[in-house]
Length: 248
Length: 53
Image (cartoon, rainbow over all chains, first blue to last red; front, side, top):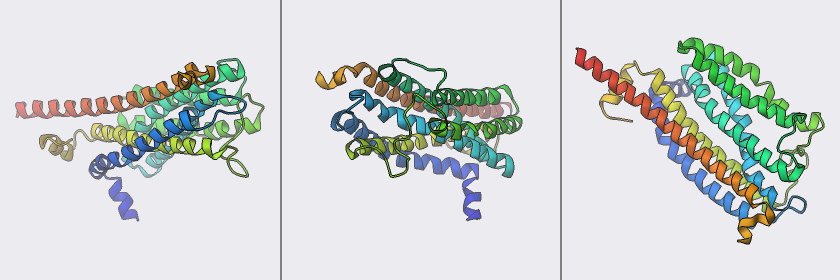
């Protein structure tokens, strides 16, 4: 097991393995999203209260879930990098941050677009779910800014890892905010006691979208981490040999 | 046309789906761009080292 992990953490091995893995995530990801979009827009019935506006969940829920999951990937990778000094872990954290910021942005904007027809407002500052998700976006910005502000990669890794780990406390706050405090945002629909509170005609496209988004995210993360590994290893012999041989 | 109007919520629903597609396209484009830039920088550095030797 340790041998496998050690081999995976080796930059040249990861670099070539990641390139081979990308298509295995892209193809099922696109198929799942294609089904999810079609079924979510044209097969799932309109909600009895929200009408067709409910279809925004097919974008909003997967992006909100990814915004939190990406932060956890970033924080755990940063912790692994800091504790066990695995360089690849820092590269994963650095590669995940911009993606997390984009999905948080998407969750916030689609939530806001949903809020206008449903709540009558684009934004509500007093709402704990909205505010904690916005804090998540600022944490991503802070992480990327801190990384960009320090030229020394090792120092940047350490400083940003601490920020990533401290910021992880916000993730459970986002998740449980609708249960802990009174919120405009609806309570949990998928992850709740007694199973999801949705009809299967609405649920299956949503699950397909969540899974499809996750696959596509994984492909994007692998691409990002590959570029990060190439940058960090730019002075090593294996990178020189790779470039001289015309490999990508 | 009825499918597009989404019961009067078409502008909200379609905007979200188009935005999501854009986010994926931008993320993919930026990942490729970063890879290309890093690769090109390494090529230039190797060439410069080769020229001086």
